[in-house]
Length: 110
Image (cartoon, rainbow, N blue to C red; front, top):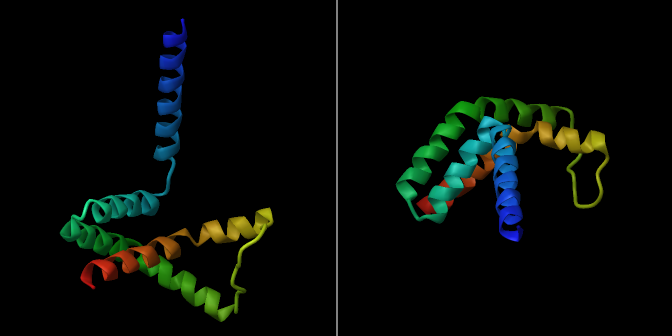
């Protein structure tokens, strides 16, 4: 009975993770692949995948950055955030993902 329960819990966990992973934004999925390539020391693939993310989401990231500079948006530091602050940070996802893609590409080329 314990074995059956453990198998059930494992399947439920896997199914939950699969549903959660499918809901991730495209740029997050792409960045996950870049990290996998980087961690596996497949540096050619890291650069290729980083370039693809930068190509696709770079314009959005640039637009977000321009808005932040134009509006003199405050920089969020550590500590507890309100729901509104969390949403503002989350909405800048493409800017964050593109930044990390550039960072990883730079580490590979260094």
